[in-house]
Image (cartoon, rainbow, N blue to C red; front, top):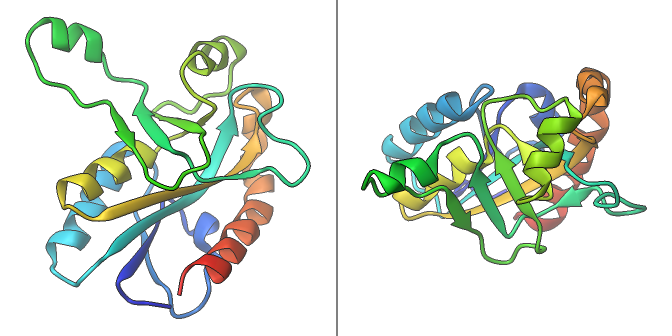
Length: 186
């Protein structure tokens, strides 16, 4: 694995099947932890040509996941829990969406809330296909440092009450993520 590719994961569980020799950063859960850990790593100066954020996500609509379709490379990520419209109306410049090249057309919503209820799921599904808790932070920091970024997300649940089963589902997702890295990074 190339040392200039940095694999970023929120948890050790999500990164447990990343191939040996990969450069891995485990940030902790949520946007603030991801921002802080990745900023520190990139500021340390070790060369990075691409950041790849791996992790799990919830599907926001029925039919997003299907046979052979549970691993996604979003084309865009948006920050779903910031009041961008209101802040813009007050004259503040806000970036709450990042476009990602070479994605599969899906949109990922990121925020610091663990989505496990149908009302919140339906609200987010108006703007996105998937939901996680770190993707927008990784994309934002990467953009600020001028480094290419890719997000790779394995769906573990439907962002509903089943999301509480995440601890039982993460290993299978981590295996898929590790296999993707093995095939696509080198």
